[in-house]
Length: 555
Image 1: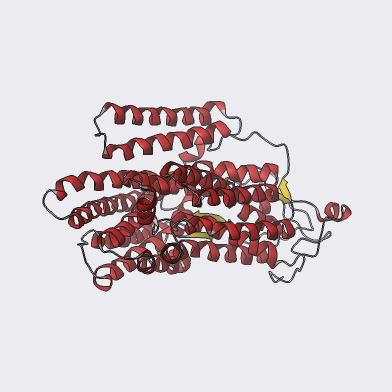
Image 2: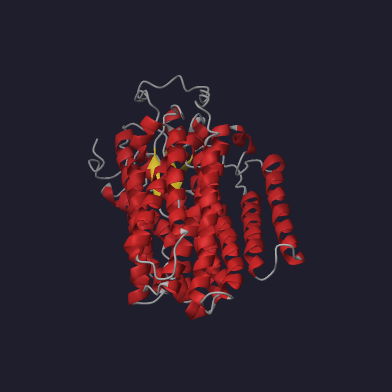
């Protein structure tokens, strides 16, 4: 059936509803499989309205686009935020990291809440909060106000983002229409990072930096109205286990304290009592998280047993390095273009397009390449290409031209990053049981965002350490560029480390165990295809995609 052939967007009363292993392969967060509210029951309540199928698809795609957009839209506006609110370089990091840390730390909890409390209800709540906190951030009168609003905005995004994909999988139960819906979701989400840098420059240049946050308000209000009209309620079947709130809070707190300790090294040396004590508290909180997950949580956020799979652990190590390099490169290139070369925000945003568009195009074609090269070889190739591009950028000097010094290395970096997104996700889920596919992809997304926050803090500390020594010998622009070049050089080393870690992917993953009862299917169910399709979310600062894997060789 065509994606838009079913004009009410729901499964008919006598139609097919996926169950058994078919629905388990569509889980977004570990737990019970998604099950739509039965049509007949809803019809009896008079709750079904004639809703065209494109309406819920458009609402979910635009909501995910808005969440991804806000990972990158503030980068170009950072210098104007610094001037307007008298922020330090450390404060600028927190404008980015406050969103990233709360988003990553609560992402898996948000997905679980959508399954348990109702996907439509959680979607509307997350969207309303995201819109409200965007408005508060745009009204900020101090750096602390802005950073707090960004943290709350990230937490709301962690509630909203998983619900968008979960709603699509329940609204479109047929495999063909679901595949088309997820393809549309993937394309719009993937464009969020590329559009974010351009939109940030356009809004900052023509209006003000506040509009990189205000822009979410009219979009959010329109989406709230569309969601109330087009989305139907659904939740997971079975007993509702407790949410692992202590696990989510302890993980977010641990990462925040660790990042705070690293960011503080610009004014307190690494060996100072303040820095050491802060880092020790962060590690202690991380140990508390591990204890909660291993011993105390009845339904742990991250069952530690899954990390015994070598492919999953390796993928998360690689994702950590990719997140660190990607977030840091966007941050320092934005500062270089505006603070050193004097670009306007709009011109700086346009300067990012080669990197963002190359990443998007490479990600779209990556699934074809990985079938020939295999996960391990494509991942090593992509990471080394990206490292080469960043090494080229690490040689920037004040006044370097766009076409001679930025365009080609950005193309190389973006292509390498784009080639890496799909094999990382495939490697993370290869051989994973269907009921843990959502857990694996959610853990991967969380690790990537955490890597971005920690990597940005570490590279900013390197750049800040270089500034004083350079300033004694060069002009301010040269001193700043020297610090940024050293930070990009660290990113090169991080990506090379990721490429080396990718060599530890097993040549062929273990097969996922078959669950009891999967062998029997009712006569009304469609037979499974020979190649099982598992939707996997991949979200970064520049791209978000849905990919499918059948667990073939990693090579």
